[in-house]
Image (tube, rainbow, N blue to C red; front, side, top):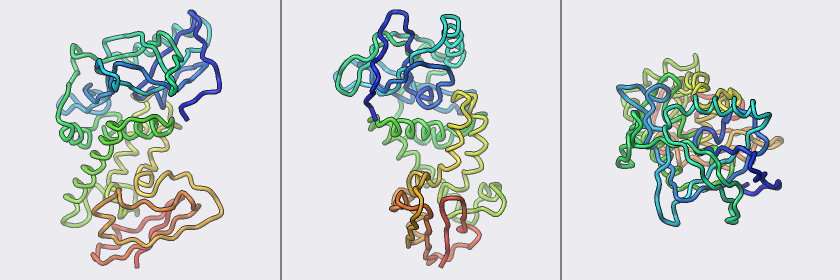
Amino acid sequence: MMGTDVQPDKSETSIWVFGYGSLIHTPNFLYNQRLVGHIRGYRRVFWQGSTDHRGTPERPGRTVTLTSENHPAAVTWGVAFQLAGTSQEQAAALSYLEWREKQYDVRQLVDVYGADGQMLVRGALVYIASSANQNYLGPADTHLIAAQIATSRGPSGPNWEYLCKLADAMRGIGAPDRELFALEDMVRKELVRQQQHRSVDGLPAAAAEGPPGVASLDPLADMTGELRQGTAAGAAEDGGDVKACRGRADFRRWHMIGQPRLPDATEFTQQVDLGLMLNSAAEFRTASEQASVLKVHVRNDMRVPQKRIKVSDQSSEIFVN
């Protein structure tokens, strides 16, 4: 997915912007070309605080910025966009980006390279939040960062939604980022741990506040209400693309059974132990990408109340034995 069939326009009149965060999946401006590539000498880190979108001043969330590192392994994958339109329209797009990235106080021109090492773009604009920024949080132990992302939320929704959208986008363009995916896995495990802790005494209050009549064996399901609140409001932060946000309603299926867009004409049935499901979301990965309807038969040895584990939606059905 990292290749391109078009030749990048390297003319001096071209304006390119390199995105490494929410710009990857939701640019929200017109562009002529979109090239997957990487920049050198920078590493993507969750060191920028979010006090108005994915957190609050009292409990800031974490979003990505870049840190400069002088070694060969310091590369950051993302997407370079060539702005479209007249000079006035491009100026308007840059004004929008200045507003959108207002917390990012450094602008750099960087060269963008393809998977084969060939330079794709010379002098793309990138926005960086430096340590001089008032919301800069800086480095911390990875486990502490994961816990902060798992627990922070703001007007645009939960912080973990921002992380997962970015990780999904990176997988979508076929770009590697071990640190990002490892952090996503840590946050998912932290969410499961929190859910298990709240579930010790029965149905969590958060689940009761979700959609009427819907509960789930999914340890993340009682956060679905929070997710849906965040996706609409999160458009302000992530660029306003409602279509891109809409897929996050499938968050629980994405992490439990794979990508929810399933091919037609087949059916897959899976037997699974409920105890396993409640203890490890990561373990439940089936061949569901081969199926149009996934049927999961749950062995309820734990005698979990039925209302907690009945689920039916467009792509999956959960049955209890």
